[in-house]
Image (cartoon, rainbow, N blue to C red; front, side, top):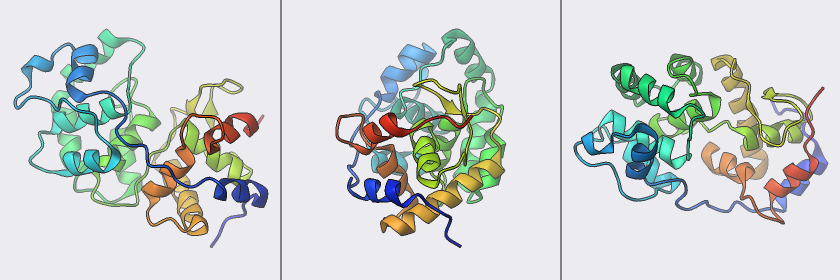
Length: 232
């Protein structure tokens, strides 16, 4: 069943075609050096190139790719930089075996809710935006998409309600609330599925990429920056 959508906002979005991002973020080898201080220890060496979405998806879903190589490559693509780098590094190191096992499980998992919930509270600083990046690039399903600040703002704006709560309120930069659970992620993806049909996009990932947009004048992102307001 279609959800109620703001027709004015939908018509505005339809004027902006999807623009593929191309390679973004950092090279995995550089991210690991900067954030984990341990890239020399990986065998084989971590990739020394930036990935575009399709390249990253193929690389991370390949079961011949070592699990930690996939984890690091996804964090690098998203340019993750934790506030407390030392704590993050130590936690990733101490939970490496758990992370590797979750990578393997996610490569075989199709369920949105189960996939999301098994990553919750694994590593401090790994919130909804980065959990869903792991799901989108590891899962064999094409129905798991990234849920970050810009896609949630877009969905909330398009559907005229707080589908997913963002914090902190009233700030330029915010994130999906850390307490999000798998059921919340399922709801977000359901709205994204509805939008996919309305836009005539082929995949959920393409729909998400379209509303993520580029950070430049005259783009959907700029419209969201100018128009979105937090729900009080």
